View 1 (cartoon, rainbow, N blue to C red):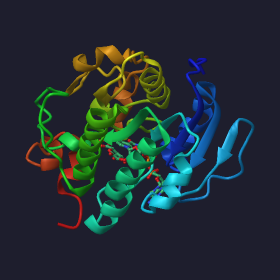
View 2 (cartoon, helix red, strand yellow):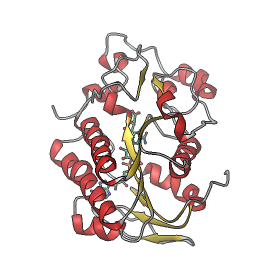
View 3 (tube, rainbow, N blue to C red):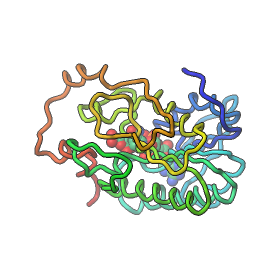
Length: 269
Ligand code: NAI
Ligand code: 15L
């Protein structure tokens, strides 16, 4: 693991019990003196350099206490797939509002927000888009991430809170299917990206696609050069194995037409 630049004293990691939270827990230790871990679910016992403060994002008081004393936030917490709107509303929409209000009240000036490629899931896999393309969410989940990005812009314009809206592609140990050859983000590159977002001198309100250096890509990160993210991993090393274990997609299937894959037809509506 590379030694990251230590930029903050106390860094809050929400969603610490989840897949990415678990992957980042040890990696982010070098970015700060104290890593505050939070989730709805149990995150286990605090190790050296860690502290634990559980909170439900839908509860404003708990979020307020969770944010107090932190210098920056990596916000991963929330529902991470398509789900009924009532649940998304609580965790992702109200949760984000509570987080930004708490950040304002406690003077937190920089946030890395785990947005998603599902903000733009209804662009075609034959298109290349950048941060200036309008949102085309592919479900309530993607819509909640689009809301989070706009909320972040509001808090930047009114209160100067800088946010990196990282539209994460597919961050797993390996790409699981052919689509993920385009969307894959390794855990180490995710950490490199977050480190870049935390340490770049001027972040502003930035939208950046969270992907590794994949040969096939639908996303152009040229609008986010100021963040200084340089991926070092690539899905290309998995290409042969992925092709061997998967069959060719039906090109009439919306999941193969649109960037959001199966999310474009998932969910309760
Ligand atoms: P995950 O579902 O494994 O983790 C999310 C965590 O948030 C869970 O531990 C859950 O307990 C917590 N959580 C849910 N509702 C909560 C609430 N009301 N209060 C407090 N905590 C709550 O998801 P994963 O894969 O770790 O993703 C992390 C973030 O990154 C999510 O925001 C997700 O939307 C985003 N993302 C992840 C991608 C991926 O490929 N893993 C792709 C795009 C975005
Ligand atoms: C996401 O936003 C999800 O959180 C994750 O579970 C993956 O499915 C990913 O997008 C994806 O598009 O592959």
